[in-house]
Image 1 (cartoon, rainbow, N blue to C red):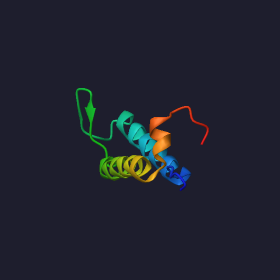
Image 2: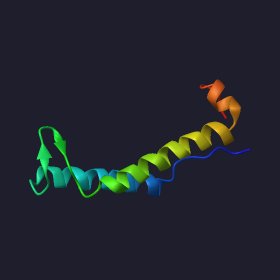
Image 3: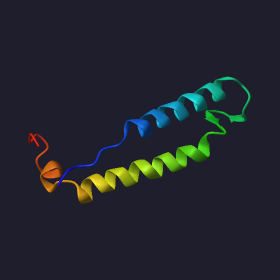
Image 4: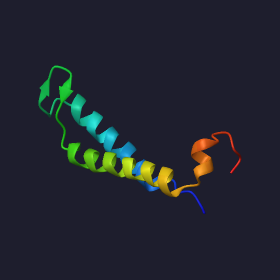
Length: 75
């Protein structure tokens, strides 16, 4: 049984969305209320968060049980 991991494309997309959102927030082109900013990249962020949680659950449920119990195990 092999474990699952987050794909490099997924991680790259999350990093790109985060960078785009930060750039948009500091550009003063979006609505800002104190420390909260509203960005066009919020909807993809929700989808990415759900995908990350799903990947985590898949890793725990379908991965090797020894990985979650024996953290230092050389699997």
